[in-house]
Length: 303
Image (cartoon, rainbow, N blue to C red; front, side, top):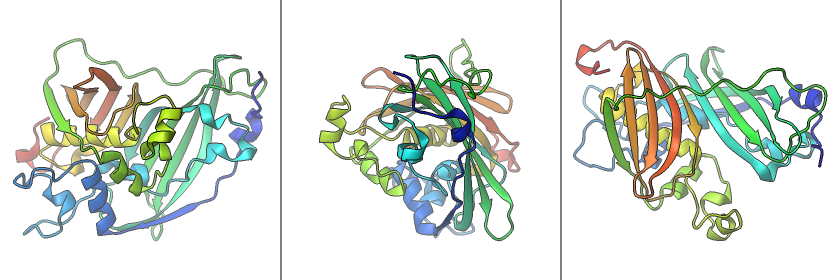
């Protein structure tokens, strides 16, 4: 069946500007939803979940940008023509132009930047980009690029984008330079959904069963945030200022309660990563990459 998408119209679709103000409590809750603070005797994560450290201030996790000024699941709006029930989040990329403030007020502007057709019956890829800017200064805080696989929308006809999505980031063939295991709680998806993604797939067992899952699954962006935590823990001594960019490919869903093992390969200022749900042997993130800035504190410059 031909897709109902009108490619030129979708590529030129106007999105409302989203305003988002966040507080210290929002920043702390986001970090807690990723599992930071699970060890009450570990001082490293405290600066992300607690505002009372002597000589330190509250710091935002770099991946907090993923939930700021989010436009919602707009693909289900009738004007898009997208078969939204068959949309899969394939890849996600985050570029930080400045560290995320622990409290702030920003705008988000979203646009569709590419629509690549794979042919009728083979689906299509849609790329969207969101720019997050400080309300007062207009300064660009972060750019978020999201690649969705539209499984039900191949055969778009004239007007689709030329070329194809960017190739995946290659993972080195050598043994990893570091490995970090992080346990997730059975409530992980219920917590993370309160950061803004209220899809019942992550909360309602009946909805998860209709989608073919044995239980509600963890949000892909929560899994990405946990992998970012692994990088911070294993390589950066929890120094968020070194985090410049991150890109991941979602390869399988994680489940609340999984132990997520992130393998890390360090090559200069670039870290490659792969994350596996340890108990099930399922690779949930692959072809991951984190770009680093040099450390201003030599004691925190492990990578």
